[in-house]
Length: 163
View (cartoon, rainbow, N blue to C red):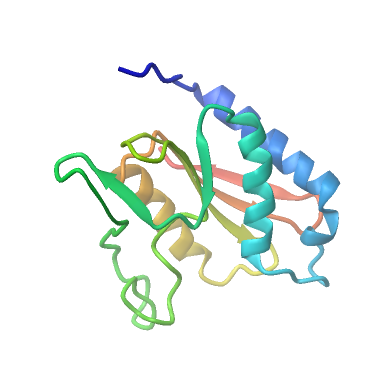
């Protein structure tokens, strides 16, 4: 049986903070509201910096599969989320997807270390929905840690940890 590291909250928080600081330094333009880059581009870069820190784990962006121990197969990540308002539900084709922006995990087994939902600070619409998704990843998909991260503009950021 493989022995995996059990990360403390302090270690995970330090890794996220370090990755954010590197993003702010190496990719500052990404956090400029006038540049208005796609969130997926930002999460990709942040995921790369997290991978440098979580060296024994897999770090993926918008990963849409989960391993099911009971059936020994990969299935789609699905969580039944409540309606945020009448026009936005998980099943609405116009709504945001129901898989995390960034995850730290181990592919091929059930090991879910961290799920991160990211929102660009100048695009606050639907941030309530992203917070609900972050809560569902921790509770329903069994991530050890889950966080809602609001990035920018510029050097600003906020972390909201899911308890």
